[in-house]
Image (tube, rainbow, N blue to C red; front, side, top):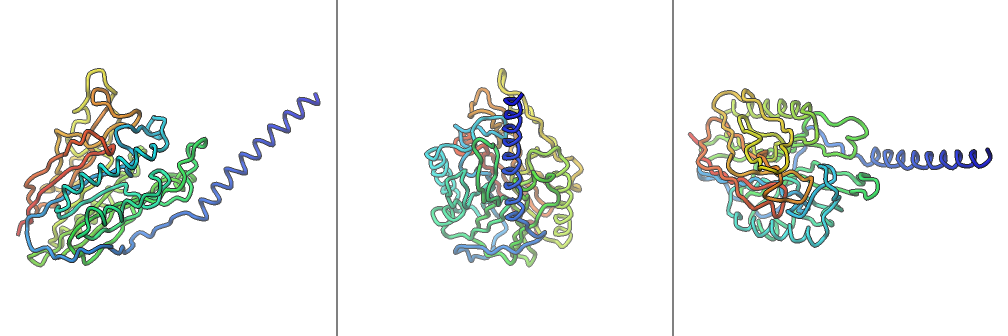
Length: 356
């Protein structure tokens, strides 16, 4: 009986210790929680000071996966085992990203997602400034922070640690306004303390005809049951319609974490490969008639991360695309197949014309 009581006290002690550790982690997260306002002004860095003097504009979107989710990576939150890629892999993915982006350094607008500034998962690379200095040296870089957690405790045996990341927009044009908009809704407590604060980055530029070009870089929620996306999409739609009502040109691009209207999520299924992941699609009636969903249905933009990439096995789909207001003509949209070497996403290039 004495031995049994000793065991009980020991187990109670362990349980108390665990509770104190978890309580301490949550208390620390509460004290350091990133709490952005609904609207926040963002300052650009860099040398871009041009004015838009043409109607033809080019765009590139790409979720670079913080340069940690290239072809060799899986991810624990998607059913894989890896918490972070080895440092040499991260450095290799970063170099590959820079090499590719260098081929698009004359693109008018480059909209990137999951750009790290100071994260353990990417070995504290400042990817935002690095790309600005080494690739887009003649452009402005604008940053919309959507992930700022001093310590992510998951998984408990090998915590993800600190993360600072967000949206990076690069352009040679000087904007009259750069605003970070906080999407409504979040996960329940305490999960919300350790997840992204989803947002979009809106930039405003004078158009040649006196109207304005509105460029929005977005990264919508993942890992939710659709409720968060629904709130986010409603919030975004109201702003888009308001800007178009003013006569402005509206371009949205990024990682929507949902498929565009009408896209078949089974398009790239391979015989004997992974089954399709459940994916929410944007509703057909989300926007009024005349708005254009611009995507390339022949090239996947996202892959499953439950295992390293395999062309013959890995499930892929399209969740990275653009939305254009009716006063814009879509001239070209093209997915770029990089074989998922540098990221779990692939870039999408687009050319448009502003219609008078």
